Length: 242
Image 1 (cartoon, rainbow, N blue to C red):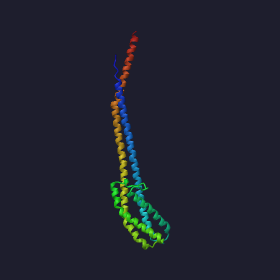
Image 2: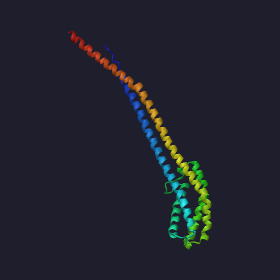
Image 3: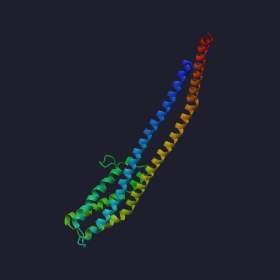
């Protein structure tokens, strides 16, 4: 009697090995996707915050330009009322965004947790400049609301204070924006590296599966087919002799 080259135990081992290799690949894919999606969400959030900071830079420059025009309310072509409301509206948003960078709980989608320790240090150093500008803007608004329009001599000292505080404050925004965009770029690089590592590991797992699972299974199947053919020949031979 010819022994079968494939036992039930060897079949169970092959099935378990194949299932294990498949499970490893599935876990790698699921884990990689979870990590990639989390990194992408953070990268998108970083860029959104960076856009807010960039908007804050432009808003600051526009406010300062317009507040200078308020010193010349009788200037040719100047819409004093529109200009005043424009500066005041910009200042309200500008102040809210900056305050959100200092403390959590703001309705604006920015908080100190969005920034690196380096960026937080930069933001903290710019706080005196920011507070100086806020106080000066509020005094200008109070003077304008009182006299409508205020005398240029009245608002000029505060406009001068805003000019003095502007460079340090704007530089802090530029530094924070750069920090955020670099962080977002780093996360994209992390995703690319992770995808490359996943590809290499997947190829290795498939190679091991091919060498130690698929190839033995094919060899066993071929042996089983040969055994079956031999049995068929052995059964037919006595019939032919008779």
